[in-house]
Length: 260
Image (cartoon, rainbow, N blue to C red):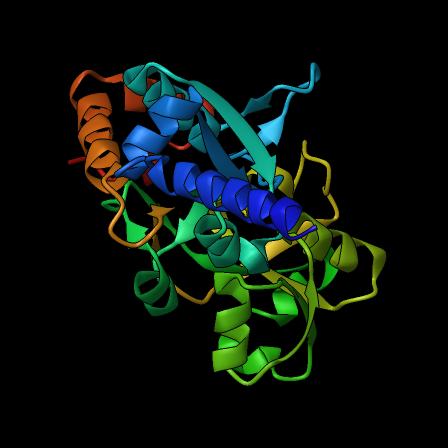
């Protein structure tokens, strides 16, 4: 029995040594190249990331991420995440980047590495169109019940203003809350409001009124990631060769791009 235990312990020791010898990729870039793909964390957020009729992810950010993957010579995989858990998803390596109309905030800067800003945005109030004329300034919002996406800039905005709110999983859910009448209003990104509400959209009965902030979008990485420099390089390249302008025109975002 003692000999058998000794043999088992010896095998465990040898296996542990072989495990220690396995080399981890030295950087995020090497890690992605080794995997042959970049995993992009997103939510369903038109016009930045959304599915077409064939189930393919498209949008301003999705197209940019595809350009970046092509630059690296790898595939791209889009994974829908809980936006409130985006920092954990990055640190846990279930995703490699957050590329989903992410507003640059102090919290984001503290927790992630960030690309240069590439797009302008704002947080806007959305209400039923037939009462929109009653809510044209911040003072008029005090008694409204808001729906906001958990972990979003919209949540930070209403929280900072001391307004009443309920958290939902996605900005699209916040819109549904207002349309259904279960919330009086929501605060979402201007780019999403422009794409999803008003005449000719899925929410013709809604309208956006007050603009509460001015913001910029960035791509998020793990702290110290070498992908930060690579993404900045590609964004500048897309600006210089006119490709970013083409993508912006495709999704009707010409006036929102921040040129380098």
